[in-house]
Length: 218
Image (tube, rainbow, N blue to C red; front, side):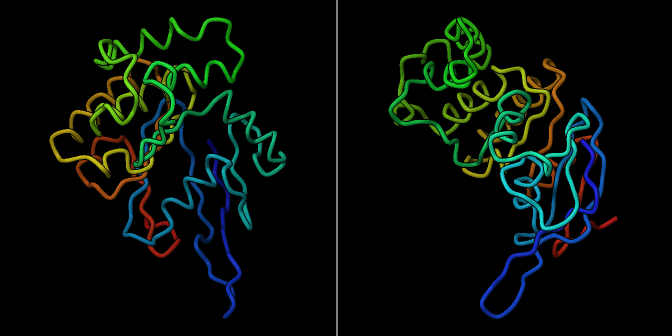
């Protein structure tokens, strides 16, 4: 992933607010990178731009040589579906689907003929083989995040974005989730980009990108 001169400005009633300014860096394939910085420094905005969930005011993001800025919304969605996985602080599981169905969903959306077998395999891998038929409300926070990890990795993404993946978990549960995230990541050879305010978590990544008021800190 190649990020060049990335900027994001939003219009407010009393003038323009610059959220990101001239951010540039490269993430090598298979790397693990933490985006760190104080609250309000632009971390989540940067993640949204990197994933093509939002469009920049200036600059560009290139994934596998493809500039996201040249694609329309459908094009960016297609790239995400083919190459990108997500893990969020709030889990983002569908409450009306079981753990198994939540993990099957991205495979079904992609049109895979058999979504159930790989979904079962990865849920067993994350320790939830006995909870396949449970709904999110029947699972603990840690178990819900395990389902979210399984859902993110089941499509074998080239790139995984994680936004404060332990933000809603207690310290012990969060540590177990992080161990699992890095184990799955190493096993899959995925490029990992995560946003965190947890310095211990950031230290486990090979590189850190530090933001301060929307600018990169060297």
